[in-house]
Length: 153
Image (cartoon, rainbow, N blue to C red):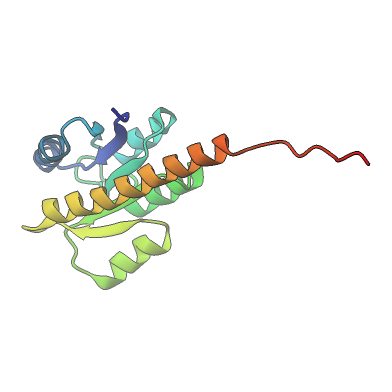
């Protein structure tokens, strides 16, 4: 059985965070190893745990008005490890906000509405398929390595 994928959920709305966590755990069963954080700073402090996916809220200042916003956290995540796939969440249904997040490396932008959980599930399935194919490619590359020896005439 393949190992589970580490996924961080970052949202300062405790109820939404718990609902999202429960939804993803139920939908993906043991395919995701989910950790939750209520601030971007807490997420960044835990990047050493090497998440492969981060689902990140755009606004993170409900609890602490001086907390970093999602764009700043996204930039820091991508600076620390560009291979981490980040899905941005926001209540803003704005193409400008969506484009800004994509510009800074977000994989996708999901509006918090009635279809958000299904959209996140679909996005995660695509990311997980990509990660699976990347792992297979890496394994194939490692198996097919060989050493060229000079020919003697």
